[in-house]
Length: 360
Image 1 (cartoon, one colour):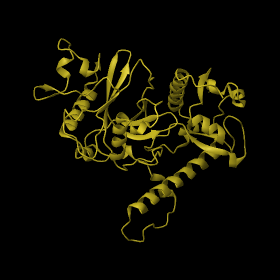
Image 2 (spheres, rainbow, N blue to C red):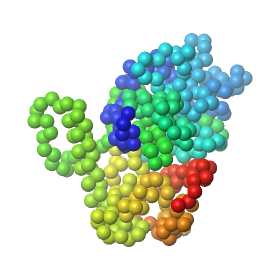
Image 3 (spheres, rainbow, N blue to C red):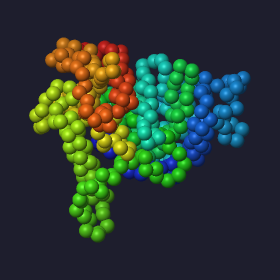
Image 4 (cartoon, rainbow, N blue to C red):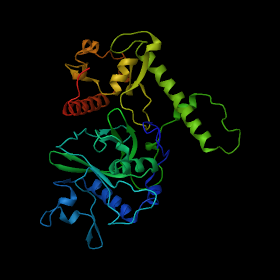
């Protein structure tokens, strides 16, 4: 698929019920297992496929009939091979993913949102290998993203593995090689939490697009993108007003050089709100999105922290700069989103160091 970096969900209204028609029956049974374990809320001392018969958790493993059915494997991205079950000819989908508390993939904790959902950014397999999209593991995740098929999610903690439940693969973020998982997904039809909130359109007059004639797929796509652009302009205007037309770090007041920055770029409702944004100079925006700068709380104020990659550049002078926040409290950046971005910055920094990326 071209345009993999797009943050626009490929399935406008994904749903559990719709996905059931696209996968083998064993996947549906496995999804029901994930839903039960999400509700049970217990920590697995090991991934289910490693649980032995003498473990108290053994009765909670997934079975089909009298046979154990694996919902996990050692590989972070797992799908049962064609020797185990019969997959559709066209697509094979990932069944589950798990994070790790050791190894080359650092963990970024899930971000819990006000609408009751969570976002978990999960590393693609072997990010340093060229042609990653052609790798079998990542291909299965791409198939889930393209078709709106959920995956089961295990999150590693110091005590063991927590079953977060099911999540949609909402998008891929190329700056840090993350698949963005958005959950929890439950049984039923489309859930409004998993597609963009267009309620702001009630405030913006929009000309009729299709003149009463049936719309083609291309027309629908153009219309959706136009609505997104309108929402982005509204978001930018609100940030300009909240930050009085000045960059929140540099103080730059040249409008053409300033951009509206999403702290958390998830695609669900309420992403286009001032508390999920910062007004930054264009170059600082690029560094923020690439997790080369972030903000940390120091004695009650947020201060800029920069990657070691920037230590010999002009940007090193911004280290420790205070984030200038709006006077009105409700317009200030969401603290949870800033903390999540900082965790992602730390994740990226540790990976850059592990790969021995040289400073600029």
